[in-house]
Length: 314
Ligand code: PAF
Image (cartoon, rainbow, N blue to C red; front, side, top):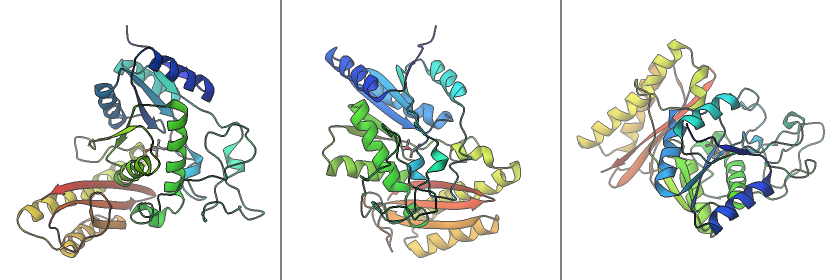
């Protein structure tokens, strides 16, 4: 019989559970997710199990990282399906499933600077993991440089929402380890930086990106792609692989690499948000590939925005 994960929704209960485990000498790994779990998430959980005695998976669609007009309302969710997948992996001790105590649609985050009040008459900011359910957040974590480029350009509130909710999860679950997918490369780097800057006593593990057999990076958003769009979207992973081969053959110009990627994704019918060659740790754009870089891409196919990346350790 598989391990039946305990579902905890209450913050205090979650914290006491973790403290009890620690008193018993256990180490705790947290895998933060927004649910609708797929093989990519399950690989994060397997990674977590390598590092710690007990595993907590959080499932929480964080309104704080969506701006008005982004896809919060159509973010897929299937809590029962998630639970049965987690049962099957047989190593998840707790599913931490916090609920918002009020309708998230009544208050939606303003895509402006942290701390600014939402304008009257418009939907207002939602807090994440809100306790009293009424007041929203005054405190936001900004990782100032890392949040700005790549996805930060088109999603101005995204990373403050991510950093804030992850810090809250860390404070509630108090894990020794937390696992993040390198598919969300910028998110992973930003969390590493936040942990370093704010002295969280947590080891951040970056887990390798998982692809479907056809090469598409796994994402909860892939369900929104039609079969034709999915076929076209393969231009993303193909152009990344080609760029890697080009570098191995001596191409060092970031502009040439970007141009080739943009051309092949556009020809396939994708709309490029960005295609960048950046340094791996600080995500600053490079002109020449002469050390470890990561090529990061975000592109739209229909109304689905996909991201992907490939590290090149030349
Ligand atoms: O990667 C995600 O699913 C989310 O951004 C995270 C880390 C769970 C925070 O809401």
